[in-house]
Length: 222
Image (cartoon, rainbow, N blue to C red; front, side, top):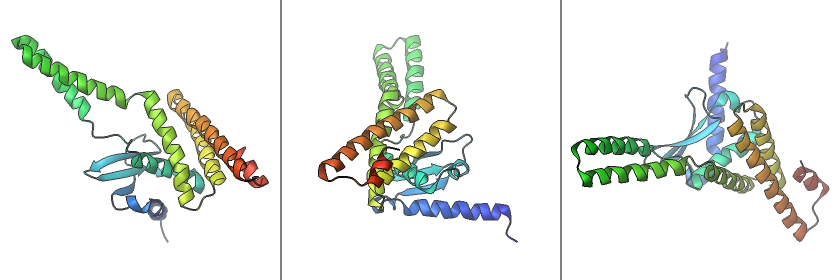
């Protein structure tokens, strides 16, 4: 008899292979999909694991709680972030900031003005890069752009535009309900509102070209 652990492992491998197949062809050679091994991980995240190599990491325990269409759109959101080149890079900034601060303190002791200026300049550059990476407004705009691109990717894989919006919207609603942290929940809420505005614009474009069917109308209004 197949053990529960074995069947679970097989199901996880099957899902990872399925997601790999949802990568656009131009990404399949350098983007991998793996189960996360972090403690308290994000549902889905991407990181560079080497030169020209990116890994999408999935929390499969929480992932299984989502419907298939919800998973697909959230996965394509992450794919869109990779295509938009907005995933986190190697964290050299913290190391540079520490070196700069250490150098500044050291040069204050030996009173070398030129080296002190260089150390302060290193602190300034690394500090500014850290600010950019942690700028909430900027990262929210990047997420909203990735949502729009995820809709476009979904249509490449056979989704109708209304169904793509519906699937991503329902996924964001579920994430809002399941997220206890107020700041993260607010980000999901902002993305959902932006998605609704985008869906309204798409609906208006459809109306401008032809009268939408009642089915499309109901999906856009969900």
